[in-house]
Image (cartoon, rainbow, N blue to C red):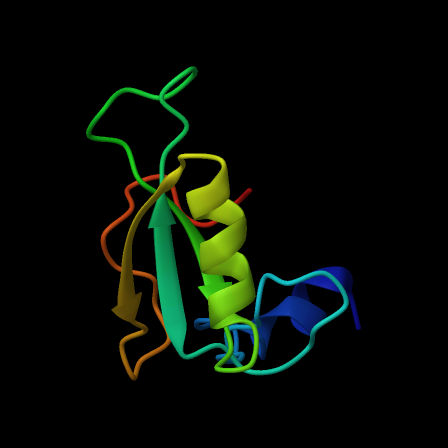
Length: 91
């Protein structure tokens, strides 16, 4: 057997994983997208995404609002793919 035989059975997309809350140390499944933008470094139309579970949605919104970064909170689509941000999720 060679290394090419090992890869043959793994073709296709990776298995789907649940989207996790962005709150530090939280491993709960996310159900909300918090869209934000830092006007000091981002263009006005750019949206970054943090994901939130129901328990941490309020905390994360407050964190972003206090700093003037929060733009909108929307439901995470059922396919768990963040939608509106072209850059994906990061913080």
